[in-house]
Image (cartoon, rainbow, N blue to C red; front, side):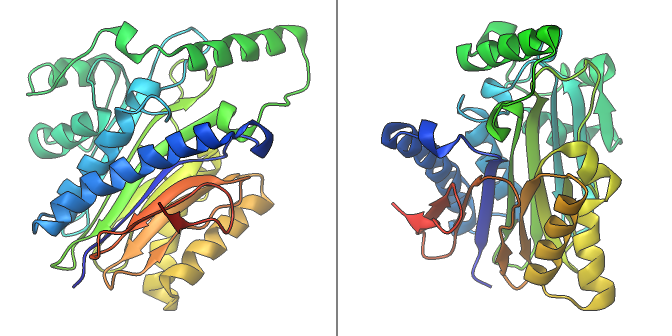
Length: 313
């Protein structure tokens, strides 16, 4: 089975008028770095679970993306990060929500999966457990970026003045994620996010909710979602794709595209990346764009931002 990896860096991109060649090149470089990080695992015979973990770590370390170092702020001016990992071999799963401290939230989620006996841990209880794990920790200043701080200030001022919301999707929300199929045909998914800009403290989106923003099962597919999380939760988006494949015999592409289209009809803007055990990949979205990429056994990294622009280089 030729291994394959697909990633996203969030649905809802900058407006084209703001996407200069330099900015675009920087985003594509970040996506390629994540693809190569995951591909290196797969190329050496590693597992899909390790591949998605390494790919998401690369995106968390890149302040351009809304996860880890580039996470957005809550309305209280703090970071609350969510992350999840799921292993398609046995549906083992681990997630964290509302945490700040671990350098890579995806590793915190994996620690929950492998060492806690739990599936989802939140807040101070999660942090207490994670302090006993072998994780790198960072002070709050590490996660501060001027771009995210200014986005928070603009949104708080907009709310105070009761002005119309004219932000592009990229300023409202964002997520990173990865799905993979390894040489043994095993699937895995990982998702990580800072949430929505100026979100209510304590709000949890779809990323750490299994069956909503994250799913992996060798019998069907692995999925990582990005977008307006409340809709992905209410429509059980990632599990709906798997259910359509299992019970209706739909292909991965058909199931994924149908779910994303249905979400759009109810106001759920966003997208997802998905892979099945045959190595088929789907990258549908209904937003203005989606930072995304894929890489196969040949090691050629394909990246895209807007529609119809998936390309190498």
